[in-house]
Length: 170
Image (cartoon, rainbow, N blue to C red; front, side):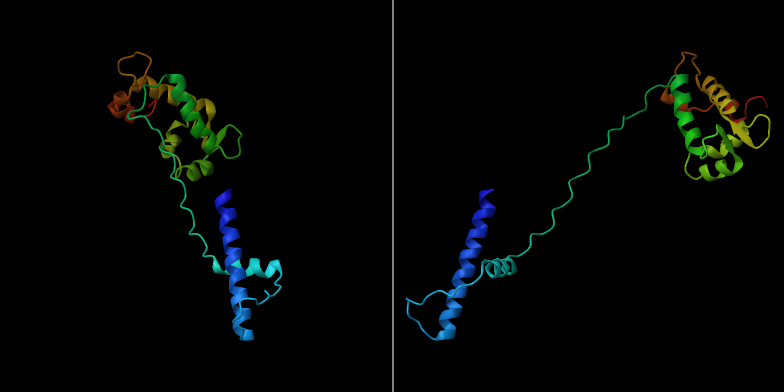
């Protein structure tokens, strides 16, 4: 706290000296016994503020590094369902437990693979229910889990079986 106080005090002293020099110049007296002119403190502060250069803006602090694993961890069926249901909830804008064609078209821009969700509509009524969605995600998990260990590894996620290109029940 002291450096800003000292800086302000020094600035006020300089401003007071410059006021005294101006008084000497205007009266023409060069006598050292010249009385200082009474200047209100507000004027001194205004003058001192005008003479101080503003500080440059502080740069923003660096954004914290986002920690992402080098490779995603293996997923269980429950984890895959939870992740997929978060997407379902985002697409279900009216929170009625059903994704309509209009909601699906709106979500297709923001959510990956949302365009493929229309194939999950088993009864073809143009409405994807949560149960239809969950059954397709479970079917997909079973297809991806090639070694049947209950986990889908990153390698299994990358290797899409040829049978996955057709939807369940077709």
